[in-house]
Image 1 (cartoon, rainbow, N blue to C red):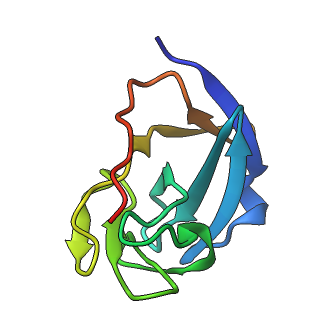
Image 2: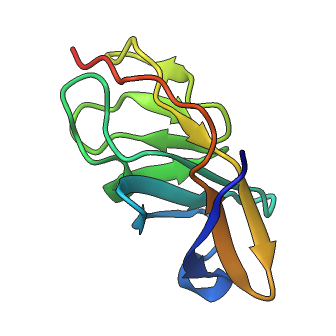
Length: 113
């Protein structure tokens, strides 16, 4: 069941940027891709627990600032090692200039390591 939660204003995250946001009990990496697509994934690198929201965003891929693992901002899939396990991805919508993330989607426990 959908449960969209406001996490930021559109102006808070310029295109090409990613930042840490909180939605209910979740810490998320919220990104605004250069093509104006928005995405949100769990804010933890499954390689060693790094903070993805402090990384770089390029081509809708979030790069972990610790060891360079890359995750697809829209699907949570791993796109570059050393991480091998995906993270959860969350639907994002924009309403009246507010970015909302759906924390009601089914998620899987994360595997780290």
